[in-house]
Image (cartoon, rainbow, N blue to C red):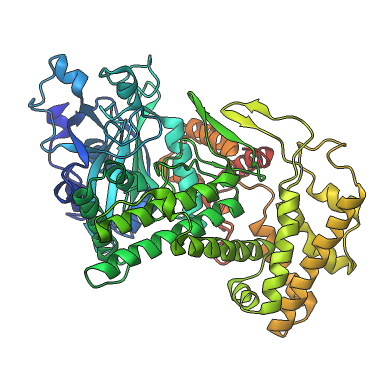
Length: 612
């Protein structure tokens, strides 16, 4: 193994085309910036790895490969990816059982398992917690910025909850203890690759899957990349410990990376940098929380700031879901506890911002204030304003207004009032739950939701154009009735009829006001909204349930198809799930058999459209 995998890489591509992969060797600037932020592990290449998936589009975005590189895995590229990412750490259990960390096949540089706060650990100050089955492969610096790269499934570290709970080290692959294996699953890796590319295409910040290295036992190493992989939990660890010097170093490191990447503008040193840091955190988390509610994205957030990135981007798809309906009573079950709900995410995001207020005040004053004393801070009032403004913007986008019209409506006093009124009607209907009691599902507990508001937003503009009058109440209920709804759930009692009438009145008034502002006819405005809404609120929209079934299907097809065909299906499926009318363009001229398979995947999505 050692001789074969350590030969110099050559390629059928022009010389040096893969040279930037040489930067990815475990070294990372965080190691020098904050000395207490990680545990080092030596690693070797794990035998038997195969490149199951490589994200050519992401590699191009990162600058790792040229734009003209074909979506084809050459023998040289396969071997390079396995050597860089198909790794297993030499952990404490290995060392205690005689593994030689200086053997010839051990890679030259150590890899970081980073430390951060985690709810699962009995210690609530981050002394034992962090990357339990992941390492940071390093970072790559290109003309397109600096990207962090990490791998999940490389072996169990001492920061795993299993070690903290049981007080012993674990052999990688041990399946006897929760969180004690250190492995990841190929199905999870492919599902995360699909879901993250779909969300990225829909302008939702997220880490993305660069590669999936598979093994015969069904495990995998899932490689993720983002421009800054720090989580709030990395900062909160030092806050909980009262460690001001390390906390300041980490904040300074984060600010410098954001500026260097061009994601933040240059700022003078000192107070203004920290205030700008806080302003961006506030805005990012407010917009993110509003966006998650609007898109029905469940992301388990809590006080530890573990399952989210510092800019509000998504990380860790293990407990993430995109719902088909507003399943606001769903809770994910994780061993001995239940998660927050999608409706509680706003409060958790606010609490994360509140903790960052405490952090910046600590850095600037040198004194750590009680967190509860900051709950009414001006920054949090700004958070509340931003989240409400963002909800206005997202509901108008759901209706089908374009960006220009959204800005004009929200800058108009009458338009502002109408959108707030419509939002109250909209949120009432999307929160109606079944008379059936809460019940167990495969990975948690939920209560069924009665209405699918996306169906109504898709169908209503066409109905108004055709009939010139509001939908009758019975048809209104029938259009948006979910598969979960019983006859009792859909009963048309007087108060519901009033709400149906008010919903349509406010919808029509919004369209009329938009047409008036734009100097267009109501018919023209409705026609444009209908065209956009068909895509934005498409029938067969991906959900967490659906992505697992689609991924299973793609894994089976991978063995039967050539690389080019499989990657085309993968790309085409993602394109079909991008719901931005300004982005979307259907693929023409594809091979008919590939289109047939794509339709099969879309039928899978349609069958799980209302689920979790």
